[in-house]
Image 1: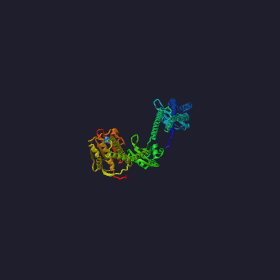
Image 2: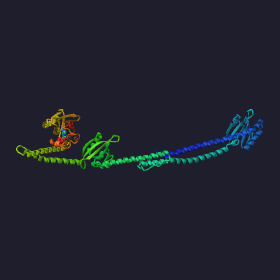
Image 3: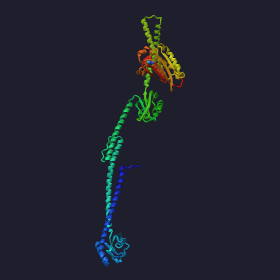
Image 4: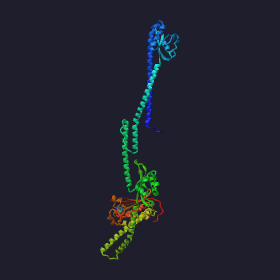
Length: 597
Ligand code: ADP
């Protein structure tokens, strides 16, 4: 529908309203005036008839009809009125304009019939006698004994009054037209006064919508419009403030996101990109400015990342994954995904943080290779030093006590060095094999028994008993020698860090989709502050004690690596003075084809 301006909507109705009002007033005025004129004429004729009656009465009583006729003619001439005297039978006995004897009987005239009936009679009609429109008023002339003697009729032509009325009508019409024109002009002014400020406000509102908040609507004379202007101005101020805050926040957010070292990628539920920061663009090799609202598949070409995002959106749970992105160059990326929530804490998609760890991984490899190479290089000389020292310590040599003491120290320290090198080599091997260990399905019971057997000698020296509880049917798909070594490390630690005559318990059980192994001792326990760092390389709670007991500081690192290479986890639960429990969780999985080592 075509929209009209408010001005053109209001104006016609104002005009119609005023036109109707003017017409009604004009008609009413015309009607009242004509009534007034007719009433005045009626009264005038009636008075003339009554005056004539008083003069006709004595003549009528004596039947002097000729005099009556003469009276009519005289008075009619003098008063410019037509007078007629009609007898009850309708016979005309006097008339101001005509000879009565030539006149027809007037008993059929309505005003005469009424007057002869005793009332005043009135009629207006065309008179054939005087040949014009006339008003007739007839009054009964009564004798003293109330007998109707005749009807006295006076009449005046309507021509004057009609002419008068016509003039008046013309004046009323002229006045109405003038008032109409004036009213129309006034209407235009009034409607303009209503619509003009509204148009101003509409223009201002449009400016606000276009973001020009500097504009202000001036004060308005009408209270309601002034309040509206005030509200619009306040709204604009508020909008300005809110938009400034939002834009500030957005700038801050953008600054934070673009100065982050990590790549940030926000995706909605329909897999469209909500935001990608600069670093994410660099990692994925795309221009982050052009990716907004685009489907992730059309921007990110890496199948493994696409699959990660799909899994993240599908699971609606946090996910972490190491990804190798093979493009122009190969990148190692750590992806951490989480659910993206809106202000109402409803999920609206997913947020992925990408960390380029290519350099880190490279350094790790360099470090790992370096440690492996150094260990390899050191292994041969230390083995030969140890061999010669052991030879020198044999009974064939008769050493001075001091030399013997020095040789024993050399032997002890080279033994420690040898143990450290062995552990470092073990760790290197484990690092190289990470995720590629050869597995087979074996009975856990057997592994535990072998581990206990290997530690028995050392435990026996301190009179420590080792018990185990493990269902014989419990089978695991693992690399048995590695799990065995992990258990040996834990049991040896339990022996080392316990007083003599204590007990060690190894407990294994199946829990849902995993097997949990507890290695529990009654030893010294570990303070809470050390527990998180226990599995780091060379981390010791008490270095001196560890060294004295022949520890390398690598035992728990090796355990952690072994368990991780089986996709398991290890934690410690310990209290100083009460003992420690190391808890290993290994996932239950089907046997897979053994990987070549
Ligand atoms: P170490 O060769 O020194 O034993 P580990 O990596 O095996 O090195 O252990 C790290 C440290 O953890 C040890 O130095 C020791 O202080 C503490 N620890 C390990 N196992 C136990 C245990 N069962 N009871 C108390 N402390 C332990």
